[in-house]
Length: 118
Ligand SMILES: N[C@@H](CCC(=O)N[C@@H](CS)C(=O)NCC(=O)O)C(=O)O
Image 1 (tube, rainbow, N blue to C red):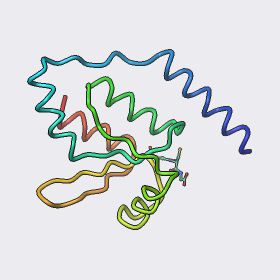
Image 2 (image 1 turned 45 degrees about the vertical axis):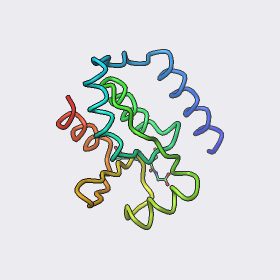
Image 3 (image 1 turned 30 degrees about the horizontal axis):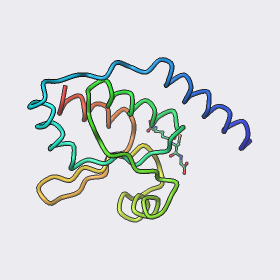
Image 4 (image 1 turned 60 degrees about the vertical axis):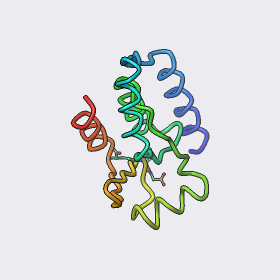
């Protein structure tokens, strides 16, 4: 089972690489403004998880430089469980006005990014 999951993961990563979406290019000043906003975001994820790949592709399409954290490793794994509430990826950590929100579900994360940055 582990081997099959591993092979599927590599296929997903290969396809993602070959068919990588075009990264949005913004004027420098505009990109810097967006980068300042995305500094308050972090994506807890696994490298080869298809739902995480979907979110990373959406980030690339929108030219969003959001920090990605490997939720298989400590301390990110523990942060996700204790602060986020469950061990499920992808999860977007959103820090706003001193408050932290943990957004699960790839569909909801992509909608959030679309609404905020598209
Ligand atoms: N409906 C969720 C599904 C996410 C999901 O199933 N993620 C898997 C990884 S691909 C997961 O976190 N499993 C728990 C684990 O690996 O511990 C989404 O669209 O984000």
